[in-house]
Image (cartoon, rainbow, N blue to C red; front, side, top):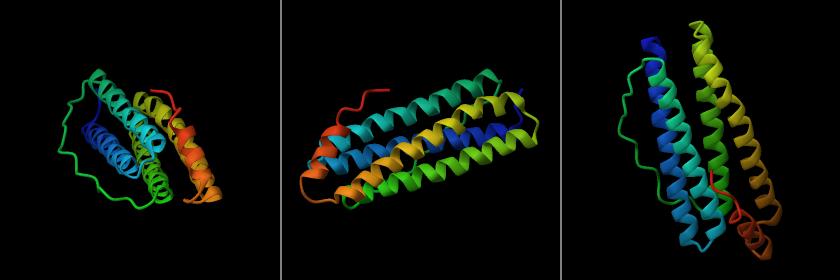
Length: 164
């Protein structure tokens, strides 16, 4: 059985994962509006990945006998600036998620909830990958700038990202 504290923390993370999906869909629409369909595609795939993260947490919570308590998901912004700003904001968001996952992991450790600690290890590893990948995109965007052929080449590359 999972503690009420851990149940509440997992429910909050599930809600945050759902917000992340909404945020990335809004960013995708923003990129589409600027004719960056490759970046939009990458963000749509990322939104699907965030939904999968929430579903995985839901499954874990229910398997532990916890109660799912979904909350309203806040509306994300609709304007994000240029593509560089979109991915800088994406990186900042992923770093904030890393902080939340670390806090969950610490809570599991504090409660000696080994099952949660083990399950959350996957998310710890996933966040390392997320930050590294988005950081690389930001570096590439800074290298080519937001004008000229380089950004369109990157847009083409981002459009090749496979589905989750």
